[in-house]
Length: 235
Image 1 (spheres, one colour):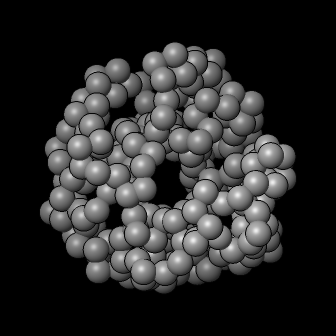
Image 2 (cartoon, rainbow, N blue to C red):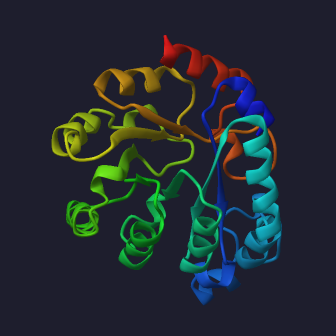
């Protein structure tokens, strides 16, 4: 949080899971897809090891409030969403993993009063139509930021398809709160291209050391990279 704030970020986002609720039993009991990065014998144990408690999240939000950066979180199930919303955040994030999960989306739309950020990784045309219909029916499209995203870690430049931002801008630009870019690519140059196409919200994975054990660190920015990205976007 302190490093993100020093880098100039507006928001520090975390994740919250009720692990058994958010995973199918066979996934919970199965192996991690990359055992080298696992913190347990099974994928369920791995996720339980990494999960922060409700008290942890309360402390994180308190620290964010104290240093002047917005706390945000992505819930992976209804139980987690209910807890996170109780903290009274300005923003809540729906991951690509759940952009086709109508129950979770409707729950957030009906109970969270702030902005809703949704990544569109892996979404099909039919699922995007379904998502739009939910946001219209709940009168929340105007409060939603839709992010172009390719669910690949790290993502090759050839798979980013940032030209799709133009499509999202044309389709939702005058209806949604904004269009964003959530990237897991290397470097910071592509984000500036996304900005010129109309993205005004940016999400990047963030770490203090890209060599740490874990699946996301290699696709993350360190403080120096985040500082330069924010400087360039502001410029």
